[in-house]
Length: 252
Image (cartoon, rainbow, N blue to C red; front, side, top):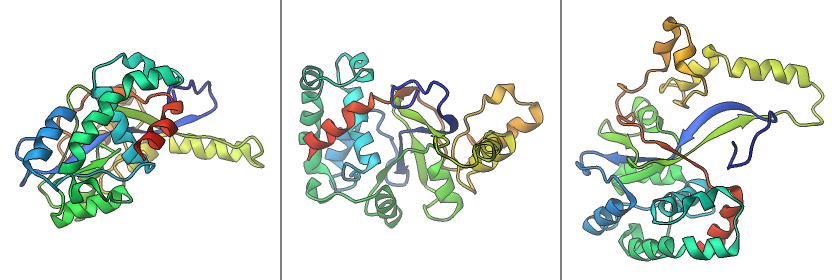
């Protein structure tokens, strides 16, 4: 599935992603485990959290993450958006943000333009919690000295939004067979292991690790790497893509 739409063979899976928080454990000894706990933490630590300004993808995903943690009929989110469903499910989201924004960096009057800017603010000590869509990004940034060794990735235990990123060949490509060769390589254990290496990228693999020969499985074990998620949360499917623009417009 790609944003709740069946792929039907038109895309090849290339990597996995899951919404993840990154905290500086030196300043966040107890990690908030839900949207509600994050709000309580922000009230106790004003100015130390924010999120990228929607429609930046991570910022919009934060809105969706808060939305899925509110009470409601969340199966509705996997279907095309209707105004009735939007009006029924989103008031809890806006109420949450009304409570959160005064506690954010610069009281929610400004937002960083990109996740990279927010992560730099985390590295500089201006923020204590930042966001990512790669559960291994903190490990990568520690390995490359872009974040301190006290950085730790974590996820809300009830589940966080996840999806698959894909490769595809345009219908009018002039070298479709060559593109298939390239995609087959990019899905191979060797290329997937290289991509998953936190010193290179840390992008999670699409392969079923338990089906690989034993000698290849170790290349994908990042749980013991400093900064990596220690307790993976369930993956919650992305809401249907038709929810994105209405959420961003209403947020603005």
